[in-house]
Length: 131
Image (tube, rainbow, N blue to C red; front, side, top):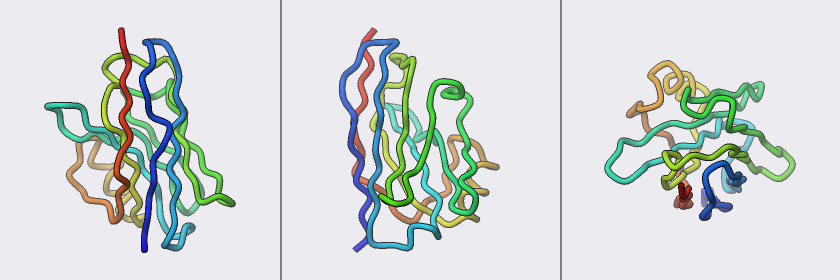
């Protein structure tokens, strides 16, 4: 059974930091890219950051570049999203997802509000940034 389990969300003041984790199981870890997406109330889903399965290249939405860092621990089948300098507009439910490399490329090309679907999704973790 494929599982993606997010953790690390919470309530933080503006300017603070959180680290989200995405623990994966049930699929060939090295065959899938991992992405972080978020959805705020009343807004479209937004792609935040992705990490390639092939060479661990990383990608970021403009809105988080310089503040968020995605990384992977391949021994633990876990991807992290370090979020610094958080802003109230970062408030959302954050999801991790897995897809093959082609879907990653399609997603990066299409932009952060892409409707391309990824293969597997976690249940989400709430991040709330207070002003």
